Length: 122
Image (cartoon, rainbow, N blue to C red; front, side, top):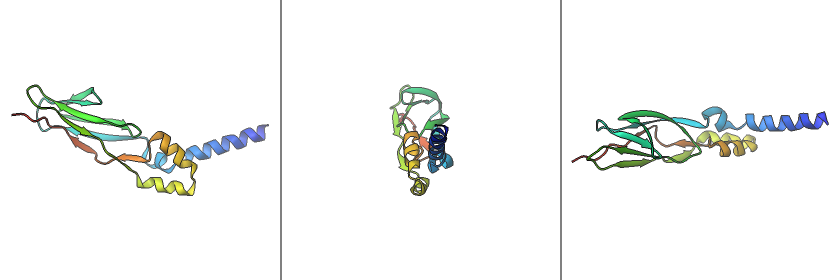
């Protein structure tokens, strides 16, 4: 019985520890959101995150939309596009890593590290 448990633990740990994108790039990414217009309120997925220039840490397995809002101006939004991280290809050497990277979203990376949401003011 203990031999079966030991083998099961070994299989689970090797799967978790060999997901290349999770190990090398993580499941979060830091992104900056900026506005060139002073006193712009910045929202991510409808949650206020700060004014003018903010840095946020985002989960790679979720979708995000940033919005810049200033009274008297037209709001501007930016959807965060993602690509598949090149590191993910290393999972070909141990395919269960694809499962872990897929669940954590680690196989994605946001296309940009800086997004601009400057409202249009007349």
